[in-house]
Figure 1 (tube, helix red, strand yellow):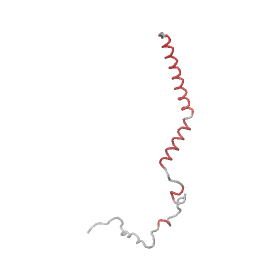
Figure 2 (cartoon, rainbow, N blue to C red):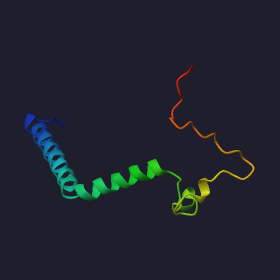
Figure 3 (cartoon, rainbow, N blue to C red):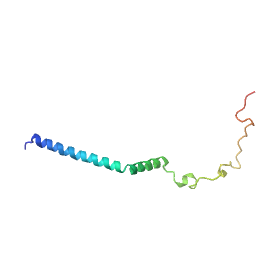
Figure 4 (cartoon, rainbow, N blue to C red):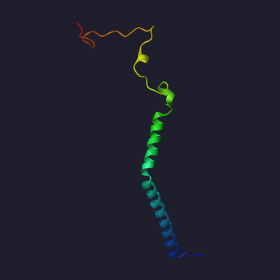
Length: 92
């Protein structure tokens, strides 16, 4: 079986047309669904950053109100009080 130039040109033309239709189809899908795609990517990025931080990672799922959890334990000494002028002071 011998191929003529016209047969080869027709095959290339059909392949080109199918490829162009695929590119147009994918481009149209992405353009029409860009908002949903962006939201999915944002959700995936946030999930990867937050990782395994579930509701229990922040102490029961809620931030504490006030500072009672920040008080030092009774058996631990308090931090020294800085001088009235503040800072490290000027050496003599």
